[in-house]
Image (cartoon, rainbow, N blue to C red):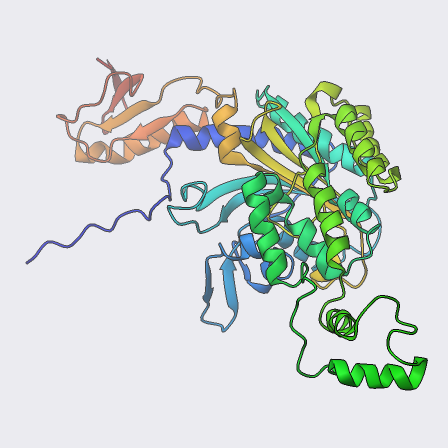
Length: 470
């Protein structure tokens, strides 16, 4: 009979052994206890959910990484790629979003497909998230609580280098609202923030994408077929305001046609779009200590003729976190902070290892529109965060509690002694000792040194003798 091919572990999925599991469980318990003391109740949601739960507000980057399939019941289903949306789904179904402030926490595996050429090398196909969500609390005090709790959990398990990098999507929207642009153009600009932070080469790509979408249409743009021609425009104008040129300023009929074409096909003035793009390109490069970066942002906004009051949004969030006990030195601001999940509406933050590090341990933010997007009857403010718990464990200084004594091996000296040996082992366990019953019952069985504290041989009459482990 031919030998069968071994069934191997899937790429970038990992097995874990007892020591790693114990360490992870110990660290998770410490974090969960810290969150519970702040009133966060533990909830466990299914690993499988309807795909629509993640597609409605997840954004393209995350939705492209779903493990998605049709399950036998006919539902389009995904392994959960994150836990915020399932927790909000649970809260909606149980009425927890209707009134008051509710706090939830969670811990479990999530799944995101990534090919080897992905930025993380496909290493995060499965990892664990531990996090918390708060529903019904407006900014900024609840923002401060969540930020403080994110650092509090890390400190509890010995992660001393964790710091907060703070941004604010709402601030970006407020600034862009000062430009007379369409919602579509503003959405494009906000969605481009992550790319703009990468430098001039990425900015060129963003501009190319803007041109393809029509935001940078020049004065030579083609006239749509269903628009009046230059002669027809001139005839219409002549009937209404007199001969073309008498009341049309310096613009020619062709220029007026092109202007009308732009109004029919695009709602945005390319010059205004360019101004907004230039402002945003400069803004996203600003980062540093919180107050210093906020002041730099205010100066840039003022130089562009924009209202600077929106920067108080960031000051209030940072101040609330400091009031919660976060050290000012542990908060920096990055005005170009962006993330692939599209449901953030206000402050957002990354948890990093040091101020200048891009090694993130997790992050979170405010997503006030998510409850309605997932079917809630009313809009409610909400926010939360999650650790990439595998990354956190790599930095944690915590060990599982040591066993008070090494286990003993209990062995029957004959087949007739088996029941007595099993009874003796059970009695030891009732006393709190670890006792392993030797089901092989082979005198020749050997064990690594230190595996057992001693070997207890049991006779059929219940008597015992002890052999020290060599």
